[in-house]
Image (spheres, rainbow, N blue to C red):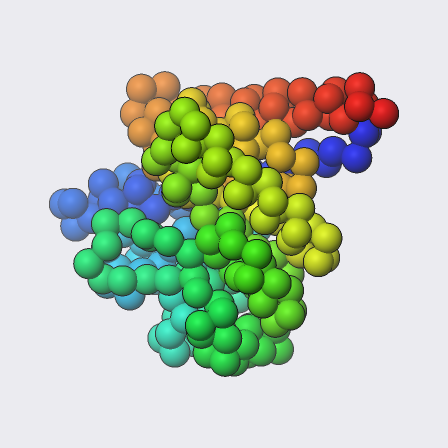
Length: 255
C-alpha cells in the first residue's frame, strides 16, 4: 500500500439547513440530505450547531443521531451549553471550534495554546462520556503539540488560508499543512483537514499522506444544486480517491 491510507470524506450539511432557515420552514431537510450523502459515498456527517442557531437546529442533531448509519461529527464551540448538548446527544466525535456571532463562517482555528485550561476541561468531560475529541486548529506547530499533550484523538487543520490563496502563496500554505500533518501524525494524532475546500483545490490536500479525513460542506452543497446531492458527494469521493491513489503510486516509486 506504500504507507498511504485511504482518506475519509465527512460531508458538512450546514448549508442545507441554511436554505431551510431562510424561510423558517421544514425543507430542505438535513436528515434526508444525510441519507443521500451516505448513498453518494460519504464516510461521516459533519454538522455545526452554532450558538445563534443560524442553520442547524437542535432537533436536526437529535434526528441525525438516530436516523443515519454514518458517524456524526458535531462541530461545537467550547461553551457550557454546547457541552451539555453533546453529552446528551452523544455524537461519535466532538470537534471543538472557535465561534464568533459576527462571523459569516469560522475564520480560523481554535487557540488551544491560549485556552489550554478551558479546552482541557471540556475534553475531560467529553472523554468521560466516551466521546472522541477533535480540535480544529491552524496548522501551527505549537497548536499541534498542545493538542497532543491534551490527549485529543484528532486535529482538524484549518485549510482556509490555503483555499483563499493562489500560486506561490498557495504553495506556501500547502507546505504549512504538510508540515503540521507530519508533526501531528508523529505525535500520534489522527490528522483531519477542512474549510474552504472545493472541487478545484481539494486534490493537493487529499494527496498529503498523513491526512486521513477531509470535512467539506459548502462546495458540495453548491454543486448539488446542479447535479443533486448524491452525485455531488460521489464526484468529491472520486477526486479524493484519485488523489490518494496518485500519492500511493508516488510513495511506491520513491522506494
